Structures are given as C-alpha cells and as structure tokens.
Image (cartoon, rainbow, N blue to C red; front, side, top):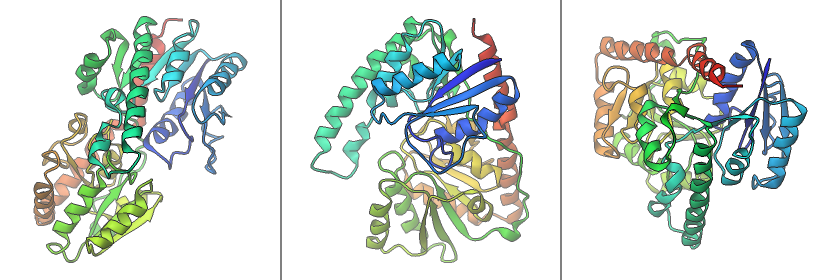
Length: 380
C-alpha cells in the first residue's frame, strides 16, 4: 500500500475553501483504492477530519518556513511516505520539495498558472490603502522567488496537475515544464445526490456562494448587478453565502448603495441555499475552476459567470446549461438574468436538467480514476 502526504496552506476544513473541499472529496476515494492519505496543515479548525485522512499533523509555522518543512520531513520518515501532493505553491515549500530525490512529488495547481507570476496585481483596481504600494512590492518580490523555485520542478521531473487543458498554454508561457509531466484533472465532486426539477421548494432567489474578497471575487460587480436587477425583479432577493476579509465592507457598501432585499449570511453549508435558489451568480476576475458552479448545477440551480477564466467553458455550455457573459459587462449580465427568468417554465426546466446532467461529468468516481491513472504512472 502506497502512502500519500498532502501539504495544506491553511486548515483542512472543507467549509473554509475550495482547495480544502477538493481533498475532502478525493481522499476517501483514494483510501478506498489502496492508498493511505496523510495531511499536514497550519490552521486549526473545529471541523473533525480524522475520519477522512489516515493521519493529520499540525504545524504552527504560519510562514511555511523551516518549521513547516521539518514537520513534513518527520511525517515522510515516520509514515514511510512515497508521494507528496503539494496543494499550494509557496516558494520555501517548493524549494524544499525539489530536494526530495527519493519521493515522488505532484504539484497540484489550484488556480490559473499566471496567478503565480502576477499574484495580486489586481490590487491596483481594489480599494486604495496607505500600505498598498508596500504590499504590492512585497508581493512582486514573493512571486519572483516563487517563479525561481518553480523552475526547480522542471529539473527534477516532478509532476504538475492543472485544472483544465485550457491552462496548458498559460503554464507553458510562464514555466518551461516538459508537457509530458503536466496532467489536466478537474476538481471532483461527491455527486451522490441529484436534485429533481420539482420547483415546489424553489424561492425567487439569486444566489452567490463563495469568499467575500476583492479583487478576485469581484463582489463590487455583484452588488452593481443587483442594483440593476432589484427594481426589474421586485419579487426576487439576493442571498450571499460566505465570509471573508471584505464582508463588513460590502455589507456597508450595500447600505450606501440603498440595495434592498440583499442578505449576507456568512459561512453556511450552501446545499440548502442551492436547493431553493433559481440562479447562482459568479462575478470573479479569475478562477482556477469555479467549484461553486458545479455545486449549483448539481442542484439544478442555473449558473451565471463572466468569461474571465478559460475553464469556465469546461463547466458551462452557454445557453444550454448556464450562461457565460462577456467579461465584466454588468449590463449584459443583468439583461441575461432577466431573460432567463422570463423564459417559459418548460425551457427553464430543460436548462436545469442539462445543468444537472453536466455536473455528473465531475463525479469523484470519474475524476478519481484520473488520479489513479496518474499515481499508478509514477515510476518507483
């Protein structure tokens, strides 16, 4: 039996983020197929994950420096680890993993590859702060070091997992990886429950699920779109499910904009919200995959998203099982929401059914087989 170690940037709580949810979905499948799976993390949580992983190990090294790497080294030795899946690319960690000659390393890139080069350049379009320039310059320095560390991956023949075939060109443009070491695997979902098209539980709700954080999630656009919709759809409300560093800011901004019928619920299990909502909105500047789109589709909640990241086309077929809007055109976004709501019920149900059907492509039982193929291809 092979032993796998996954390195986490924060907690291993699946309610806190997409990366954590990915491994929460994938790990039971791997364990059921002959692998022991261990995890190292650095942020504590009340969520109990002991039944998910073979073993979990905590490091209090917030900077992911020497102490974090020492914990990894101890786990590798004590648990006889054969494979390390690096779930986040921090330059000190990447540099350390490049020294492991006897361990197979898989770097799982959970974002668009260019994010690791340009990082937070979008801060320039976010709210100005006195420390903006300092933060920006430090981020640039961080990404230069990360870019250099990532170059070691190519020299050590380590594997790279990206979330979409559409990211290959982006990756090749930034890092000179041998393409035979790059594998595209989408995020997995435990699609054991599919929602019916029965509308009796649906409410007139337009939903947002995700982190409340500028600039990536572009919550400012979400509020602008709702401002355009609230008078045109007087029977509808907007529910925002999720937390983040900018939650309070946008709660206040919604009041300043005189927005009506908008609710900020904080961190909640989104399943019940998907079940009762008609539309799920995404307004992100960029995403690695857009997990909430598939989650919504599973429940027949029709997704809307900007054409701002290549993998959105892996998930949504525009007009068939959801809607893709020209990047950041808020007027078009609002217009297409109204158009969908005014469709005859028969047409809306066809789109909902198509959304449910499309979500099944990302079932963990299917995506998990792609991981098994990758793991079995490693030369021990």
